[in-house]
Length: 193
Image 1 (spheres, rainbow, N blue to C red):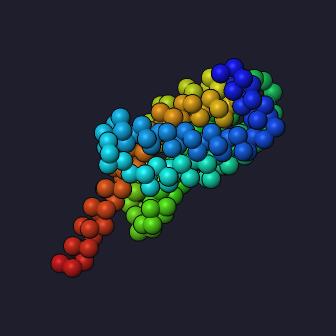
Image 2: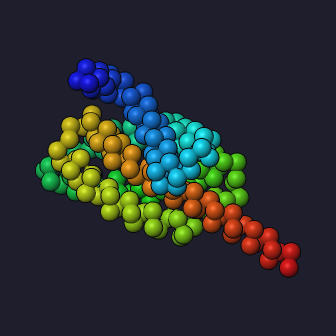
């Protein structure tokens, strides 16, 4: 196991984009599997396309964006370590996160081939609760991350916490999908009536 972590650490330093995209893909996929099997108890009715979408999102969208984001945050210099932590957490949670939540729900609707569900999924039913829960989880995580963790390992720390967060996102997206479908059906009935 120690050999694996040494190799992974070396990969994070030599090829950060590849390592972090692979990590994000695996953890988003694993989060969805946990959501479907442990939370939703789907058993043999597992939606493999859903797992593939979340894995793709993690590796092709979230991973590259977060790799560049952390590189940017790590380059910003502050007069004191305390100010550095405060401003990095603020930038991460108040600048990046509100848009990232929109991108997640919008991307899921588009990857499912349902562009008409983008706006209803992002609506207040999904967005505000997800954003508030994100802050409860990631503000403390990022304070610890930016204070104690070496820069090249910060994405990994967030990724480990994200395994549980991704489980939540998968369930939240599934619920948002059902609500968006109901909203669209309701709109059709109103237009016909």
